[in-house]
Image (cartoon, rainbow, N blue to C red):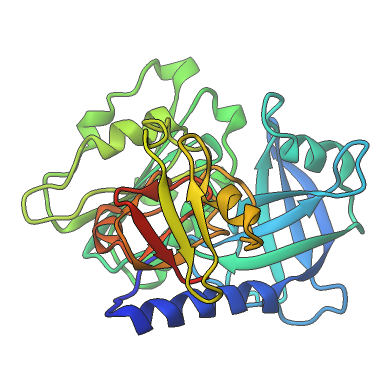
Length: 342
């Protein structure tokens, strides 16, 4: 996410363009290839059914994929980072780790998706954009390597210095090792730490002191919490992280507030424990959502007035401070009234 935003018109334009992008890019992908790339991890190569060029994307982007649900007509919408070569415009590549205790999407892909299947998709969208930096430190935990592979490729193409710390329980479960070897592993830029061989990693030993080094990290929440705790070095920027699951919320605001959909004028009271999305639906205003956890970014909405109480795992500190957009599936209001660009 990002981009310089000014006043209310910029917010409206941004929100409308995001909605337009979602509607325009929805379509169907065919599974051209499915293969096992690590223990418990499969890779899908996805193409247009007619072989046409797919929507462009940048490092950090993800797509919404509609995967078959067990015993249900409607599919499950899940988000997966694009990890392939973005200079191959006719295909997307994703890697999916089987999560037996997850929400069902990964199991569906492992067990019920086969080569030749057609899957609905939306996007790509990007809430984890790679920002310019003099040097990069990438930190990946397990399948969190997926959004970082295209970033590493971009850094290599731009001849920017980079290093990667790649953590996992076992090397057998780490996907993308062959790609990393091609991208620069032979130059000692990649440090693989398998806990079953090396024990617990000393993560703080990797904390950069140089403000020129920008940190991008993806993986389990515990790892990302530790990386975020590094904070910003003097004169530098805080680490940027992408989460696959939501952070533990501090809880819903104890008091109700009023939300207004500016385009229709519809007004609803958001009760304590109720989401903004649910309150708006009571008065006939639908908001497109997917994860309902503040992780996927589908429901990004412009804020025209009010002070949003951000509960998502997407915005960084600067974006939260601007207060010009929010994710109403989880976020709430610090003020008595919130006006949204809906």
